[in-house]
Amino acid sequence: MAQPLPAGKLKVGTGWRYSKGGKHAAFDYPVPIGTPVFAVQDGVVLACNDGVSNKPQPGVHGADSNWVLLGIRHGGQKACVLYQHLSPKLLVAKGQQVKAGDQLAKSGSSGNATGPHLHMAAMWGHRTAAGRYDYLTHIGPTEKAPKGTAANEICIFPPDQVCTGKAPDADPWASGDVFLDKLSFGVKNSDSVKRLQYTLNHIKLVHGKTLAMNGHYDIDTKNEATKWQIQIDKCKPGTPAADGNIGPKQAAKMFGPQYNLRAHS
Image (cartoon, rainbow, N blue to C red; front, side):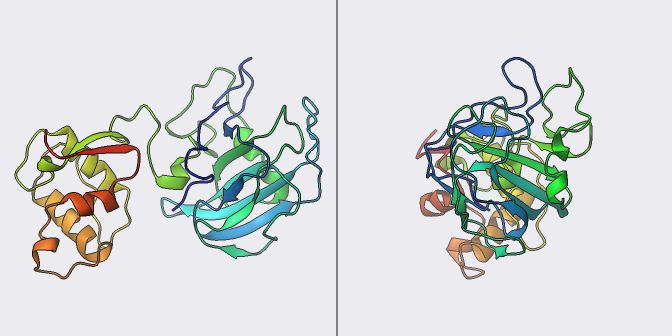
């Protein structure tokens, strides 16, 4: 999986609702026109629109814009991601297969926009062009931002779940300090181990098992870490590099930039 924008460009502006309370149910990333926009997962372009200038039309509901509707799979089910307000001259076409990280387009300010930004929404199912705003349907006037699926069972929020599998920013295990001396079998009640368990739970492993977030480096955690070492880090079974204990080099590969790797607790 990949991020929709380059590193350092992922600050969220508008989220679940607009400042005046209107439904938004997407992420707006304020970025300059021309910022590369990437596929967050392998998928197919279900529909797209191109050829609209980058002259914004704020407040004009239904204003034509450039967009891509990418069909993916999330949690084993069909889902899709809408990229909106793109610059003209998309890099993909309807029906095109793409890989995670492939560039789809460049960001812009086309359509109903107050300025340059990328609007990204996610919803269950593979939808048509006419259904690309279904994520907004039947969201109640006072419904709070969900941590998964909205009450209408269509909208996936926050939409970055389909990018990295990470939980909302409020999840304490999606980022923070990881002390390397805690990443070994037998450690108990460790926040670093919880962050390891969280990370392993969001990596697709053959015969992978969902770990309890207990902070104990127990046999289940060791087994999942060993699978990662063999399947992802390509270590040979039975070697010290595939013993279930995570060293500095492996931690640097496993944990993303949102984690601070530290040698000692």
